[in-house]
Length: 321
Image 1 (cartoon, rainbow, N blue to C red):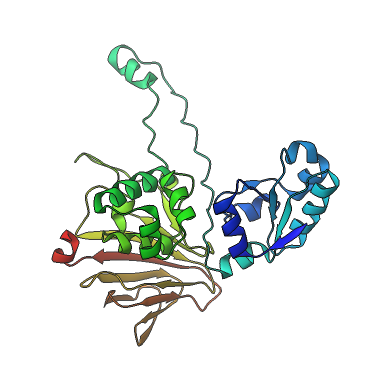
Image 2: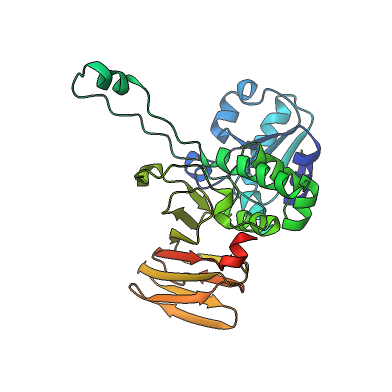
């Protein structure tokens, strides 16, 4: 067994066809996993290694490294030769500021019709509902289009955004949803608004954004969640978001384009907002307006989650760039 660190694993993923196996429990997997990993709990690996480990060159991942080392021992006894364990697990991966993918909730099955219909109404009812594309597919398509528009290669964009080429490739292929921080860095490197990477084409008809179908972006540690409360389409002069910050959570945001402003209201919990050299404390019901073209941070110093609603506006000239 070979023990590797986060950067070594990132290099292995980029350079070789490795099988990354996450051996944590389902509730842990649901909080976020390494983008290319597949989920096989340790008990399953031990119970049936032949089925769980179909090929060599496998990297095991858990929360801190103990269970992955145990899985590696099982793999070696099973006869595999190239076996790795991630030192420090997903905790170390996050500490290295590498992204996790948060699995989407299962799609709810449509309710059965309660009454028969006839004619055109029956035909319409018989058609399956149009399914919105998943967020990974939306971001991947938009990233590819925006990158092509400005004429950047994956390597060039990776250098500008400060993220790995491997991760950009996974995003473009629709295999992972980037964290909020990574999405911001990519949008800044491309010179487009944040929402440009999340947009889909809609007409001008009435649109209902059901909470159960919401497309959410998560921070790398899963403790900060952003949900858009406006329909994506062409870049907007204003964007409306619901934000959720876990107890004792923190999210650091890079400076946005010049002229960008945020209007934030706290509806539950407490928030410490740091904007450049200034710090303000906000209680439920408090609102604040600030220029977001400087680095800023959302900090929850309490144990209870903090819920916020944010309206972001862009300078018109910067928005047209």
